[in-house]
Image 1: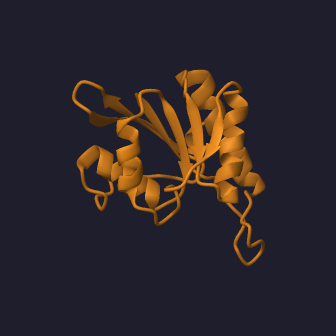
Image 2: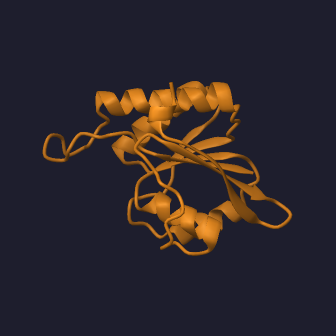
Image 3: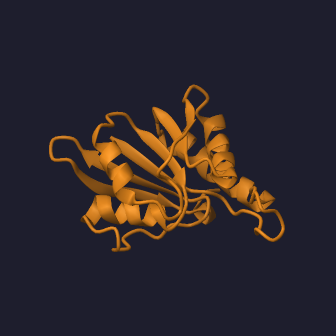
Length: 155
């Protein structure tokens, strides 16, 4: 099983717009990364799941354009300060590839928990609109880092 952890794209400051929609730069970067993952990496996610916050939902909608037959859904437990063990537990029951679109520090803590068993250990550098691919070895249940794609490396 492959897990694609996607940090939302750049959002407007809260003082400018309390809903915090994506900026044009955030949209463009999310699109470049999603296109690269869809066309070059050959990802085949079963679902695209987002936190429900506007910036994450908009990023997930951009990803969904590149995976048109993949359902998009909002789920809890993906907020910036949510407990990463919620999703670590949910992932045990997942057999299909999955995209999670969320926020820091949650994604960083989830990666630390899955890869090292320690949510406080920073093992992956996330970037806005960037994607990180983890892979679970089903017989052992161990996770490994496959790759990381920041927007500046996605043409």
